[in-house]
Length: 239
Image (cartoon, rainbow, N blue to C red):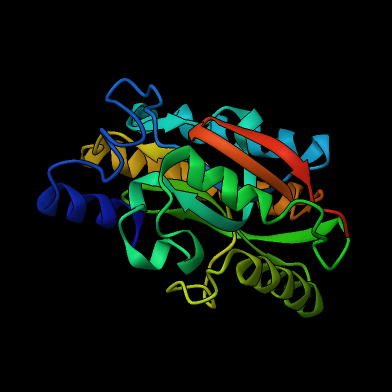
């Protein structure tokens, strides 16, 4: 489905974007949605510049107003989601060992499970750009390991993290798609805006794959966050 078709379907079937009023308000200001996670940041300046160029291309379109754009300091690839308070009551999002814990207490207990733990395989982690993903909730860069061996290595690390968290059973674990989120949707574009945005997204995708097809990620960072704009490392996982 093209972006134009996706937006037409969204306008017809949904009153508002999924994360409007949850992660961002209508002005693009971040709302509180705390939790903890394990992420990897882009190591090279050229990679940051390539992402900035892709963002500028799409943000400059008429539909640029329809996304809340994340600051470059928050650009990362999630290696394993730990806890998100908004999902706290769903059994699949909580480990058996901490079902009685809530809020920041649960975050801190989860974080401590990883203190002194190794990732099992050393950085850098080389991730290949496979394109830009665009959905009714968000937009970003799709990634996979540069080679089959690299993909297997990173998947094995992700399994190791899931086991340590007690969340290996979480639905979608085996098929999780690696990505870097660039923006969250806060309004539906009209038909003309959507067509212009689609052209901008296609151009940004082609330029990104041509100029910076592979990103290098650093050591896994165990982080706390209060919203989607700032992920605060508590410590790094050794190899």
